[in-house]
Image (tube, rainbow over all chains, first blue to last red; front, side, top):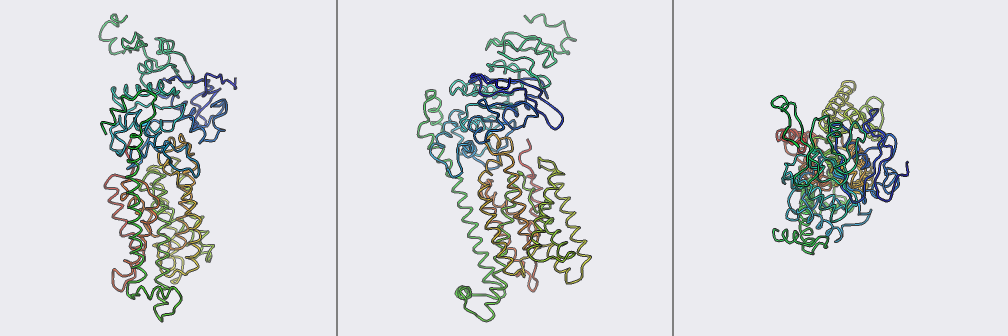
Length: 279
Length: 357
């Protein structure tokens, strides 16, 4: 069980229990993150999805069990070594005052600098590439504070890209973005996954966008995996009812042909005879 | 810029970044660096002027040639004594404590991400002071042991504030710290009521801070300690620009949270040794960081904080000595008089925390 590192996964959790003090939030969880795929973790509020992501990113020490990176316990590896393999974008990152876009993105190069090693042209190029991929090169000398929410989020992604890791973990990268910017952000991550083969693990709130962008979907409830697999396997009316406690219909997304969840709300049920139009 | 952007979009997938993009990066990285060099140069020049004024001018003017003759050992009756035993030690001590307070302020404000979270606001300085006063006045300690007592006092108060406020800093930390500062002040005032008149003068100094009448051995000791602490701070502080991104982002970039705790501890010790030499000179840490930051376009600069701190203390001491005729104000009174309105202004501007979200 503990050596559950098939070659298809570099990051996995084995009987992982995470929590604060005596309150476990994630219990006895097994998870294998498929290489080169987009994995999305979904679940209701307070189901432990952010906690799980923090645990996978070694920000939380497990109460029991372990997170394995390349077959070794992640907490026993030097943190700077891990930072060259696994990048992280927290939920609400705060840019220090007055910091310019290039400066912030350049800080993503930190794990690649040794004790006496200084900035080189390799770093310039890595930053340039990250800015181009996120379409923020034109913002290079702007101050991050003064950017719009969507631009700022792209700059943070650029910082994570400059880090040049094979795995990228993101905690709700679309919070506070309007729907157009949410789609733009997820397109960017999908591109990144397609172009660079970066393994992406993210927590998302929106189930329908999750179903559209995920290769691998993990549904959590009360800190345990309820269902796992392709969106079509996971997003069923039963699973959605179990995970979110929501009466729903699942139809075919006319654009992406992935499952689309349509909530059945109490308000509608009272007002008119329910849902006959739905297939 | 827009031309570059379009070319970036049409570039084939996976192709290496063209040279001009890296050039954009190089150019954009240059501007803040130039600004920083200007800030450091400007503050350095201001420090030089303030220092020279403090040593050469005042109620007894010394010419520059005379000053160098005194330094190289020529005895000029009257002038030699005034320069070597009053003006010069005062100026040097002001410079050293200013640097220590300035760096400590920069470390605290950057790591805790709040301009109010400066060691002199949250009780660290007064903690050092209170324990030193108790050691001197009630236990009869002297010299080095007082400095050690001050360091222990500062660390104890910092730890207590941290423990009570919880690990995440923020406004709780500042409120708890202000409470701790008030408690420490009352300890000093209590001791003040318990000692005779001679000691009372001494205790008063530990309440306001003064660079007056400190002998060379103390200054040499402070210089020596700073010679160890400042390079250490510089070494650890290189990751400050990662730590200031917040614990989670910093950990993701391979900088453990323990690093910022260590920097805070260094800040506490820097404050404590400065307090041990000159008392808790008010608001230097609090002023130096934001001033240096404002000059530097809002960006963190420890070197700038150090220089700004030194300029503040040297200039304030000069003003305190000569601004009001026949009155020799302790430097702490002057910095307090500057700092209080600055505090109000900072609060009025609503910039006590960073972005609300």
